[in-house]
Image (cartoon, rainbow, N blue to C red; front, side):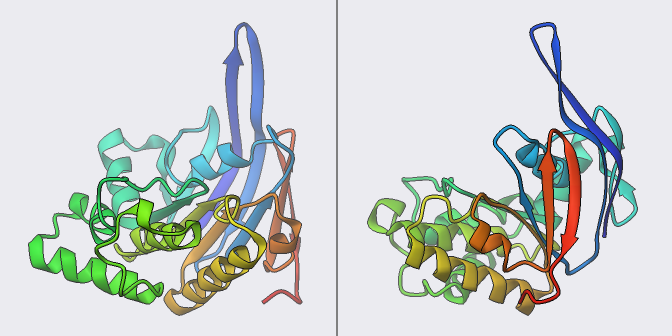
Length: 228
């Protein structure tokens, strides 16, 4: 479970402070699904970085399962990210010279999984996203939707507790957007993930059980009882 209390993040542009987050209080239960929306510069990506242990708050606490992420040394934060949190990005972030299987395997290297076991786990993850026949293809040989499926497999191959997605459908057309969302929603249910996603797409936001709207660093959460 995530518990955020009074989370504030201040950046400085020259001498001017910018409050990206301004006293955010937020609880996200295990297995929950939350979509984050808001205007550009409103603090969406900053909030996701806090949840992903990629940045530390200026004030307040971000707790994951009772552990204050902001107080951990960098070595422990790296371990949390490697073991417990999967990331999916708008731009896929695949290594162009590696095959789909090799790209997925990169997520297992920090966990110390060796050789054959690593290859098998990566192949199984790609099979789970419908790419079992594309293991040997490099990103340039795959469509945008297929590249995002590789990125999803890479995020999930380590069997994380949390999946964080930053505009995962932003580079896809409408039909592929729907395919990727159906895949993500199915994996969320199948694996019992805590699934948190930033999106500008209101049609996607309406599908989520909870919506966090962030404006000028302040968060308002609404529930959607009719969502899938």
